[in-house]
Length: 74
Image 1: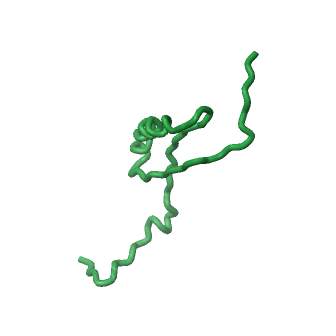
Image 2: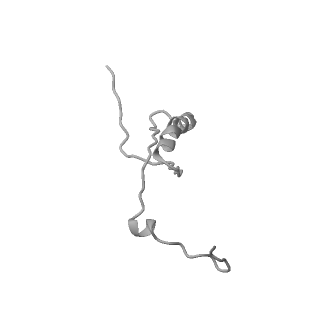
Image 3: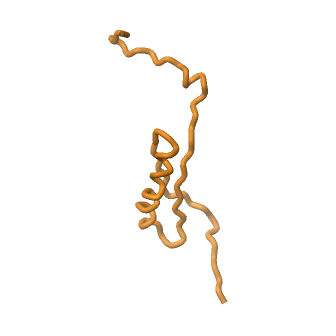
């Protein structure tokens, strides 16, 4: 007979985020990130990584940044 128990709650113990220039760079980093994180996980812990793409709203993407004080535009 085999019995298993499931935890009654889910606890997030650590979350870390990194910014990548594109989705391909992020996906290339996932295996290495899991390789680094897995040894620190305890029995029954779940280690996962994913890429999430963010596209800024058009109003922010097309917004011109003001020049810093004392600078001149060439």
